Image 1 (cartoon, rainbow, N blue to C red):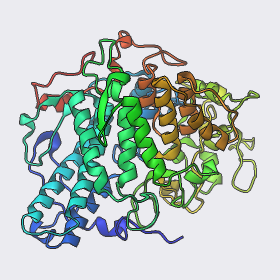
Image 2: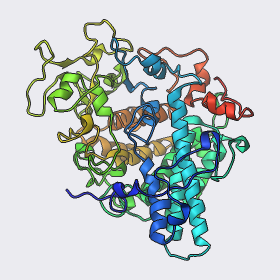
Image 3: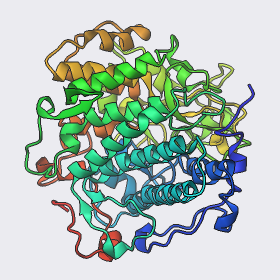
Image 4: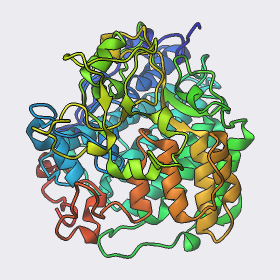
Length: 545
């Protein structure tokens, strides 16, 4: 299949210009491949390439803590390995890494965690680049009147809003920085509710100016933030409004979604009605469930009618990497596929229980999402260990530290979700499966949950998702919906946010006792990285840290 990029190829984008940002501290950024400013904005095409398209270089990544997904020690890992969904067991000399992975799972990440700091810096890097882009667009508009300018301005504003969405989801109260020329010492923390209102307003104002195109499909809008992506974010914001509009998340109270109101196209809707409205807007644009669940994660998955926003992947055109399959597979499993593996991440005991693993009610999606039991290569041959015996993954044997156990290297059900690209490069990390960030199944589950929280029936949407994979229908209760989000969205990076919204993030579970005072809820946000806070001594650390 012939593949296209945001314009033609990300290969072009990495040679384009960016101007230096005059900020200090964590706001300082040296953009890729900088050219003299006057050479980058001479006409509307160059303005688009340098002030809009270049931002998409940062959606994916190839090094730790960079990109929205695909790499390690960043957003995805903070949202996944801090939960009851996945665990990175210590396997003898493997995966201890100074206690990093155990610290995530146990919620003992502290205020000096390098990965948390790097994630903060990555997100603000793109915010600052977006600020610079908007300034360049405004400067260009002083002497030009090209018809494309409002759309380009809207696209950058929406992208910046998305990055603020990730920032407030992870860190709560954060700095709201809207200029590229501000000194770190002049930045103040904004309350979480103010950040939420800013993001929501930005997306509401920009959505009508964005093209109503499928972002995941090859062509001129491939990989871009289009109107359905903005609608998805608006629905997600409203769904979490009780959390995001709570300025004091450690006092055991939060707003009620039924009494949080939004002006939506001239109507006054509560939070749950707002979720439903934006979900319906996405449906109206033509999204639907794929008949085959696996098609969303297949090699060359750009044709999916379900995927809403993805990270474009191409082993020869782009540098974006997908590390999650690579780091989960046993070494011999990976070798049998002609790839490599690091024998790491596994499903938790709680995930196995939710899926009904090895029961008569095992969910059909288990086999889509996990390798378990005897392992086979792509030709159906049994994969062997070095001693000649069969490689058998043992899901129930998983725990936080497997060192010196007989199943040290084989415990745990492993990540399977994405189809194996047998022509992948760089140990399998450069593959042709676009990384799925947002998809329509989540839209249906958001709508079902919003209806239930609003006192209405959400069975229809829940069971559209379940019957697609042949699972029996269920009543849409909050308990069933939380379980369904685990079943449907396993390995997709949503579990931390979901557990927080359902009030389950701080509970104890297998291999993870509750921390002292964790019932206050202080761990539902990560701390402001201490090195960042020391640059701004007037900032108060989040309560509990």
